[in-house]
Length: 368
Image (cartoon, rainbow, N blue to C red; front, side, top):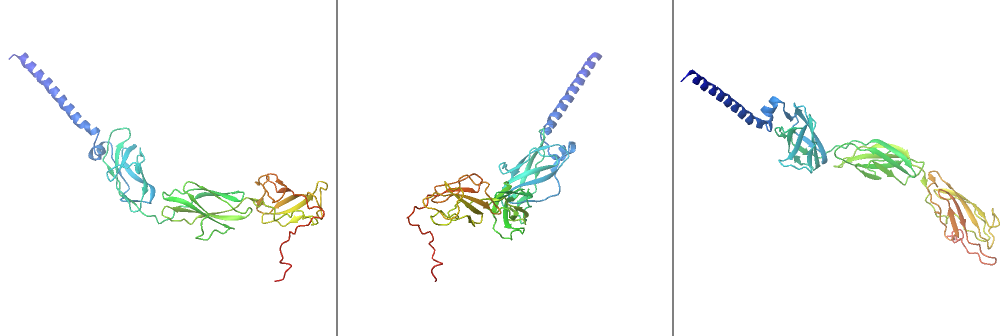
């Protein structure tokens, strides 16, 4: 064989070797490339880009009945956000258990809805890096057990009171306890809080943050106690606030027992003691006499202008127009927000007619 022939054989063998090396390299890349889509934390991911695992040395979590959140710290040397899904006892339950997704680089917040006492949750997190298909080993969360909470919830904050007519409006901010359920409100007249065990004047559900306490006497001071209650019935000591109610709108609108109707020969009434809401004076007149005093005449139509004066804690502001009443009156009228009432009575009896007896009590006449 000539020298040129040998050289040709050697060149072909070199080319074949190069092709073979390239093929081996491609095969190696193809086989190792699968690991880009799935590799456990140890040793591949942790060795090259860092790992993700639970941190803090916690071996058990406890939650209260109802809706709760559990924050699990992470050691994440990737330093980037993660995407997670949650399994409970190996199966997903997204309506009841879920995690914030994506999660922060150093923690994951797990939400559990409707936990019951003695219920245990064995959770597993499926984890991958945000923005890539890299998947890590499953993270097994330490057991989470629902226990009965024997502690009272935190108190409300920013408790305020606003006076309104005959009432006080209370507002506050609910505590952030996961098992907080409602607020109880008690009150007493004066500056001393209600005694323990006093029946609440109001129960206010979580999230309402407002209550109106009505039927209070205006100008009086009341002390209100606002207590928080959790789902297991624990009650806080409560926060107190003292406030006065606004004047109560007058509600005693019937004047029959206070104003005596005109009767011929009887002396006209000029004042009356009233009731617990107001006192009053009366000015009488006729078509011919704008300022009648003394006895009532016969066959005469009398008109009474009744001027009511509200007692402490009461007001006529808020009284509707023509809301006062008097049985048997021809007309009766008052303006809105007014305690001045005009009553027109039927004509007194004619001359020679009998006067009806309007005093029926015999107590002062008959000795027992």
